Length: 569
Image 1 (tube, one colour):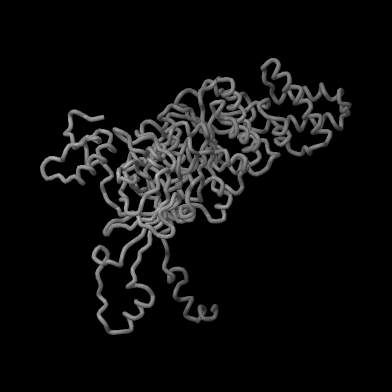
Image 2 (cartoon, rainbow, N blue to C red):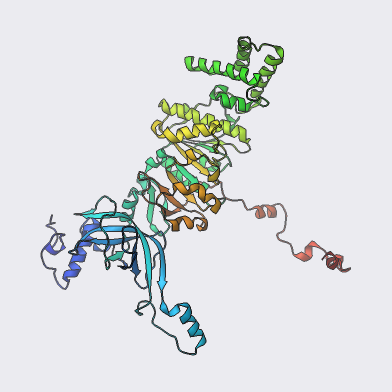
């Protein structure tokens, strides 16, 4: 359809001749660019920078790989996106194919091993023309097709699978930002989603994830000091901006300051946060009682009494305390023929010992606390591993039940160092409950953000159900455990993981969250980052140590006069 406000030659289907000194070829180029930008006005906003042209060899172009000769004085880097023309046989531009750069190599016959050796040995002048002037020196870019963006009347259509094979000689240009965000499935406006940063290859292109990604759960992995806790903080800021309540189990105290800055609360097990004994499972209970072995009379009597109280809880909704459990053990002992003093009394004493667990007490009021924008940071520094697993399982189970009942709004549960509470062990209750939330939590309006530096130790059933992943630099031995979560990340991108700078990560997901793997620079935080590696040497100077001493200051010169140093050697 023609736009009557524009000259005929500027309309996409215009038949008129260009005005002035504009050539017919230039008019065609402008028509195509004007169609792409969606406004039919701003020619300069189209993908104008020419990067090169598609070349044909035995491996290109195909639907799996396209190679192009890079124009002189132009650079691209691995992971960067390029826009490749898709034309029909008549030469009309039908679409743009978005490709992801895999690698670049130079062809220069003057610098092959033999030529370089000859130049060094023989006294001949070996000056030659450089790239852009030479006919034999050039660079070749390998790229992987990821999406095809059809051209519609006034802009870019919805991305599709690659249908148009680029032809040798087709132009390759630097894409517009909206072409990349459309192909990646990112909301065009950073305020419409979770704004995490920008593309590593092009800082002008924002990386904004659809908010629904947290409903399908998030994984953040990386080695020590790679920036994974920093990424968790950015994600926490974005969720807070959207009003999503968050509960964070903070193993290392990394979110304490951020929680306060976001208007949240910090609580510790036994100090502002307690769980009733009725919040535990039978397995949790036995795990929490020292000296009770499975299959013994003590375990049977305590466990059976606990089950009786749990059935009453389901019937009348009234929780129970440790004192209630001790009393119930006395009631049930005769029924189980375990009323002998040598059985009953030790069982009651072991159960009563639960009162020494500081985190057992009245039920924490999640319903009253988890309002829009709430942030509850459970400071678990110094908590023993066994207790940490019990607390994590109970919190997760409480939130799951409340979410199922619609008693709380959509809430995100995050756990730092979650390999500690969800190891690859089917028998652990904490593993079982996190596996259940990962499987169906999004249906009950409960999301997970799980962070770890050791993915190889994590339960695989949980790991594979975290469908948006931020993978920071990580040790090569940990990569094997992540092989199934890289989505369409090319091998070149995976191999680069151990070399990524701090604060940069590979972002992957499924079609509903992140269409294609890409490398992202995480944006700066506005809240305090509590996970930074402390400067221990500055701490020593603050405590009076002057700095690194000279060697002569360690051993006085007088002690060396008798040749002591030589004798020591």
